[in-house]
Amino acid sequence: MSLESFSRLSQAIVNASEAASIEAKTKAQKGAALVVNSVGVMSQPKRTVRPTAFSEATDFLGDAIKAAREAKLARARDNKKTDAEKPQAKSLAELLAETAQDSE
Image 1 (spheres, rainbow, N blue to C red):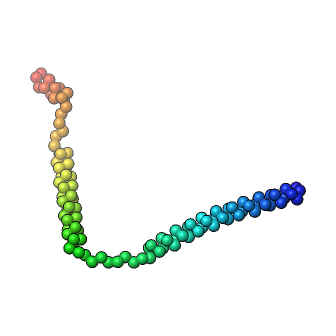
Image 2 (image 1 turned 180 degrees about the horizontal axis):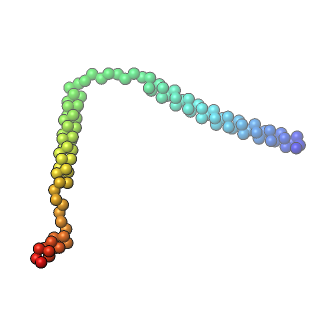
Image 3 (image 1 turned 180 degrees about the vertical axis):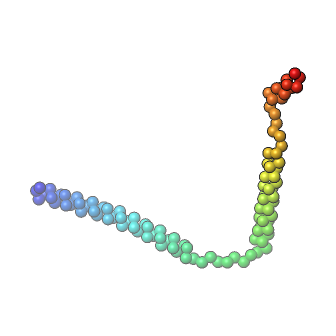
């Protein structure tokens, strides 16, 4: 290996390592910025909100709607149970077969 080819090889290795280190550095900086930003957002305490008449009214209506939906779902479940207990409708072929058996 000649000195010229050795220097080219070593320069290529140096260039590759610099490019890799720059990419790693930018990746690390982005990761660090993400961590710092998320920690900054999470560390802010939430303020307590004083309930107003409007917010109390909306909460009351929301609870009433939720209770009505739950009652409707309960009625629908009860209806499904009673529907399962009812005899199933017969097809036309079954009805014709029964009438043929009855007429014999």
